[in-house]
Amino acid sequence: MMVSPHFLGEALANRCSQVLYRCMEEVGSTKGALYLRVPGQGGFEVVSFYGWPRGTRPPVAIPEGHPLLLKTQRARRTYVVNDASELPELSAFGQGGEWPRYLITPVYLQGDWVGLLIQRDRIKGGTFETDRDEPPTLAICGDLVAALKEFRFHGGPHPSREQPVGPGPVPEGLPTAADLLGELAPAPERLLPPARAAVPPMHAPGPVTPSTRPSDNERLYGFPAGKDGYTSLPWEPDRTLSGWVAPAPVNAERGKGMVPPEQRAFFWEIAGLISQILPATAVALWIEDPEELRPILVFSTLPLSPDLQQQILAHATFHLPAVRESDLRLISRTEMPEVPPLTGAFATYLPLLLNETLHGHDLVMVFRLEDHSFSLSEVEAIQQLSRVLALYLQEARLHVRYHHAFLSVSHRILQSGEGRVPSLRPHSLATARLARDLAQMLDLPTEDVEAVSIAAMLHDVGLLLLDPQMLAKPTLSDEEMKKVRDHPELAAVFLKDLRFPFDVVRMIRHHHERWDGLGYPEGLRETAIPMGSRIIGLIEAYEVMTSGKSYRRPQGFRQVLAELRNEAGSQFDPAVVEAFSELMARKSERV
Image (cartoon, rainbow, N blue to C red; front, side, top):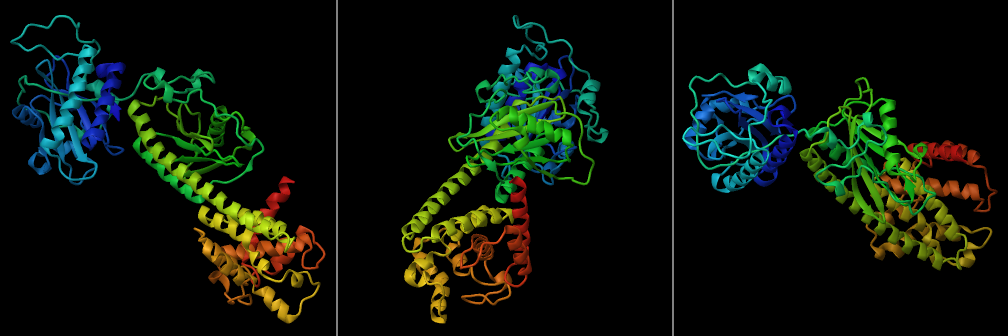
């Protein structure tokens, strides 16, 4: 939303902007513009507007005698224009819309016509209707009139009445048209044409609307004020986070983790919407997790310099004192990666807490390079979109809790078989840990990561259905080996009634297939083998070779990696082998 702060003064301009923004919520208008008559002049000049596409704006002024004013004077109340061809003089207000529709309302103050509210294009399409849309519009305009009275803004007195006593003179410093042009700088061709006839004063009952740009003391944080420049927004101090810091995490020894790809994609969409609705240089998200330190997601239209990225980390660590800045990482996404990065320093930022629960303290931060405060309407827009993001993250956490429940069941199944096959539980847990890491390394969706984790834990549960004395033999006959090879299908039969919400059973059934098609039980090859099965098959081979099972001497992990690479393209998926090699290289760097 844009506003001319010169016209009304900052405080009244802010109040007007709040009222105008209600047109979107209560009437459903995607665009709105408020014009007020400058005292002593016949024309109307814009005070505030919202919703116009970037690079466009409504006309700065409606000159005295313009046909739009003449029609409004004849109507004397709210009227609808659903076919813009009926009023060619509205063409200057039609930027950004193929079929603009209008709801036009005159605003009266103490019986004088002092303003004009122009609303455009309903949120869900369709036409405006006077019976439905006029009552909420009049209520909005009535609140604006109350604000104008409170701040002693008055139109000129009616010639037939005495000057009212009390409120005081009209505020000084009202702008000229040149002042407004300098403020809003519209293209000349977007201005309304000059008028011919004068418009006499119009009187009737009435309403009006708004403006933006709050004063400097509403800025949450500005670098000129230094590190102590945190202040709270005056309208809702209890809902701001200027000085908020997260409590200590439940697990202070968290390792580094990743944000699942679908959560990243959802945030990029929300951050992109925020950047479209209001001027923002960058939007960042921190997702709290009790088990791991996740990177901060950063969305920006233009690339950010290393200095700007470092500032985002510094702001995050202010709110997250239990997290060291050196432990934080950024995952960034930009819409225009080919252009040179932005430089300088963020002058303004807005932090918002999404979820404050035992399971997380998620934080959104919106940054601006410009020393320009966030208006109430901008804060409300950010809050609305952030609530959508917060609900999504809550659902994601609930999903994780269900996953942990299935893991608990899986773990209990392994414990029940420790007496029959003692090596099964440690082997399965080791396989599950690495398989989960590899699935995340391959950037699989959360659902697939969870499925791989459970399938890897239960991949050999079919051995519990075999004779333990046979499994304890140092060597097996061909018939016995055939029975052992049946364990994936035995596991599938055993687990089918558990009704996992993921494709766990199929992953287990095919974890001994080979990339070249020489595996079992069905001889599937290449991508016909489920990805989870390919991951588990590789990890199981690595775990067996490094632990010395199957009556082989344990081998070093570098030797095993070399052997796995030799089998890439025959026994194993080459892409999975490559990702696993990178995963193990990262793990070795941390040791």
